[in-house]
Length: 192
Image 1 (tube, rainbow, N blue to C red):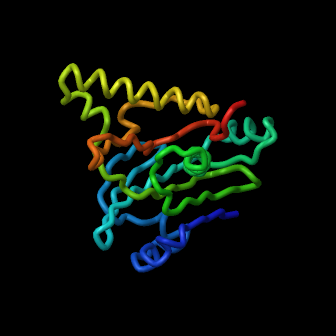
Image 2: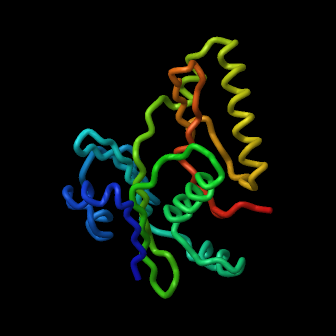
Image 3: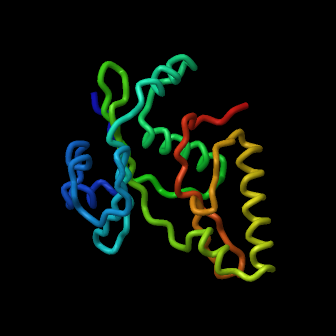
């Protein structure tokens, strides 16, 4: 069984670039390879002035599916869990990467592999901003990071959050915005 979700705002763009189906997305060699290892690959796709990131898992652990079912939840691939967490976070007012499309393949209700495509977020990797900052700016950045972690915890999200999982954007009013771009997790649901 295939589960596939494509944002209507991006459907035309994906179809025009032969990425309108689960099979096309899982088989594409389009774009530039950013990461490649036995478990997954990540590609940067550029279409009509837009940059997207495609993350695909090559296999999923059967034990993860059993763990989900034991908790009374549907089993999902890592990319679908990431998409679910983005949705929960966005519903609670967090800035997150926009999900363009997401899908997974199941056999006998056990996820086999999957993908997520997200739109590029304008700004800079917070880890790089931190490394290039002076001491005063580093203190401010750590304060913002700590406040973000506090908000996540207040809402029941306790998964690890690294500086490199956040995009830092300077706003016109001299404030800044922290946007979460990578939310891989075993449990995408808030804990209460």
